[in-house]
Amino acid sequence: MIIYTVKQGDTLENIANENGVTVEQILNTNFPPNPDNLVVGQKLVILVPEVEYIVEEGDTLDSIAQKFNTSAIDILQKNPSIENAQIYTGQNLVIEYENGQDKRFIATNGYTYSNIDRQLLLRTLPYLTFLTIFTYGFTDEGVLIEPDDTELIKIARDYGVAPVMLISTLTEQGTFSNALAKTLLEDNVLQQVLIENIITIMEQKGYMALDIDFEYLPVENRDNYIEFVSNLTRQLNDKGFLSLVALAPKTSVNQPGLLYESHDYRGLGEAANLVLLMTYEWGYTYGPPMAVSPIDKVEEVVRFGVSQINSQKILMGIPLYGYDWTLPFVRGNTGAKSLSPQQALEIASENNVTIEYDEVAQAPYFYYTKDGNSHVVWFEDADSVVAKLNLINKYNLVGASYWNITKDFPQNWLVLISLYKVVKLL
Picture 1 (cartoon, rainbow, N blue to C red):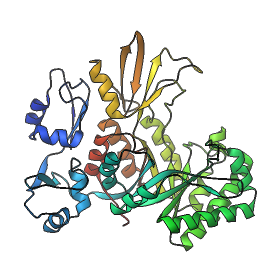
Picture 2 (spheres, helix red, strand yellow):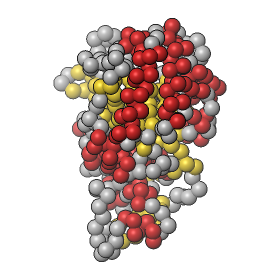
Picture 3 (cartoon, rainbow, N blue to C red):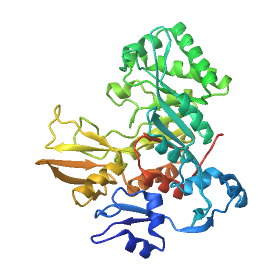
Picture 4 (spheres, helix red, strand yellow):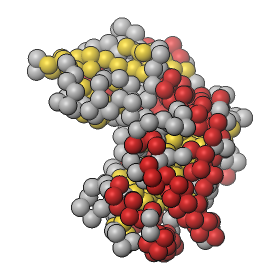
């Protein structure tokens, strides 16, 4: 894998020639939103094909996979321009890239909303172990509030991805309630009603795992939460399901703050089958401009996490988004706009600005002016993803969890398959 940083005067033609690939190959993997107006500082992932194949009449993905002792999913991973898993005669497919062997297997999870663009979903599923659909809520009687998830579950399973049901404190009013969580965690009868309703839905709809995401819990419910997750995990496992629990990004046992105090890493790590560290949102909508997921902050959380939890239970959070802040930042007044890395590149290209890279945070950013207002954008690129994914090996984690795959970031997946192989449970 080569990560190429665009220089002044670069074109796709000269970049392709310098690196021994075709322009089409760069376009069909990176999907740059600005192919005719590259931005200084923009990153392109260059993967050099080692084995290629021209599709012949009568070929299918499965027949080609069989010919090369691989899988249809593996071919889709290496050829993200394939649409709807359909190939055509004369199409050039990459079977293997240079240095493509002997990689470690990891698990990957992608969060999504039901309204995700279906083409984006189909392009992303080959890279996932789990697809977590946001979100189920519940009432104070233990009745589930259901999202529109039936189609996504079917599509996920068609691509060999394990669908994950997400339960949070979403109410009938569409808001999140720690008061509802408190009611649940202090009522064992209500807990059992909810657990039975969850298992019924999982069996009916074809879910394979459950993600429990209760945030901002009252600190007095800390132990109750561990007991609830432990009991829920036991009943899920008896039915052949897995449990995952989402954890706030802590760096010490007694870290102050409502978000952190009720999340006991050691207790919840023992109670659940897997944990998801929410290592993002340092830069957030109403906070000052900074990287969403600065590598020094992320590593601090991971280091604490592995001191409390078996590393082979930990999925590290990785953001697929950034933010655009209007300057000057005024706390309580300025609200940043969320955007995908692709949208960030569009803005940089439209305004013909240079993308900078913060070596401490390991994150790209740039400034621009619109309608007389100054802006700063922090986002993710190939280098920032490499920095994060390298922590998985460094700390022997089980894998990565992405928030969220409705944000388009093709280069992330190129980097992922260059460093690791993805576990499939189906």
